[in-house]
Length: 324
Length: 116
Image 1 (cartoon, each protein chain N blue to C red):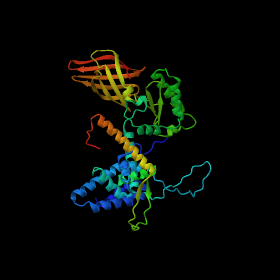
Image 2: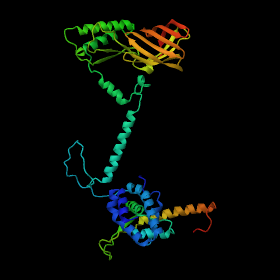
Image 3: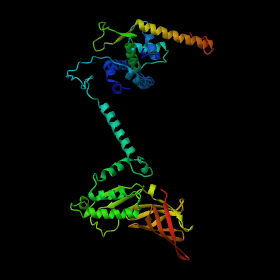
Image 4: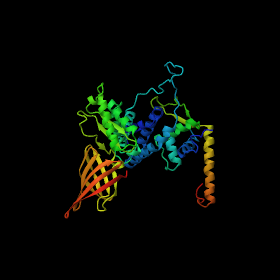
């Protein structure tokens, strides 16, 4: 090992150690290089220095190196913090390199952790939203409720136990009143604003106050927001041959999900559509095709299911209760 | 009472104390003396040597000797170290501790009489 290389390795030692002993250490190395010649001896010297480096570094950092601390020329204010430079040394490149590496590693680890799905709220435990997505979702919500939004909130909150139809009708009327008032509603002027109202039940109602929202427009769209918590349904009565388990997820006016005779034998939902309070979709299970025409009522889905087989089509009444 | 940094005394520090028992030595001299007194089993590298020297200086077990006027040039001036009274005392107590261990090892027939 050359003297230059060892001088570089000595940079790993604390500055105070190098200040006091670097020249001595290099002199000792020169002495050994002078006395220990030949390939094997030089090899042994190199191994000695490497093992010495590993053993000595902790001890060198544990030692204290007394040195005179200059008095601070900066004025000291009573009650305020004061900062003093104890070691007048330029920042070394190694320190900058290590600091940069540690910072980048820490930042990368932070980003990796934040991108993963983390359950922050019981309602989101089965979701796959990262904390950043949750924060962005929260920030995108309107800060203040518009007159139309307030009307919706009032209508919903004043009737926590009313049926969904009654609530929807109240919403329609109050929105109409808000829209026809003397002061123009900002919500009406803002074409893309969305108002979210959280019902006392696990279901959310979203009313789009988009442009073109008139009394003649279709009724508010009913959405089951969280497929994992609110979209599972179980048949309460009806034909035993009909699917008894449904797992639905609504995205706007479209419905997707699965259905089947039990939770483990599920088939994909086909052509799912929401129109007002009605939901219609199909299921294709082997040689049988089911078509559902349901209405959301009193926390239940009620309606008819038609089964089409090779022998023909028959229709039965069905009633589904929300499981979760 | 705060715990001393050299308690227990590391092997390298003990060997340095022993090497300085007879005469004042500089760093390379200490290294050679330690190598000789251990039969070549211990060769102190610069890092271990000067880290131990610094710790021994802090504890007051050795002291630096000013030998600037003894013929060496200014660029080749070496630091010499000397064992202090406290250092000699610590070295003796450490040797006695090792001697006790030796007695125990002999009593338990772990060590035969070939040593010491």
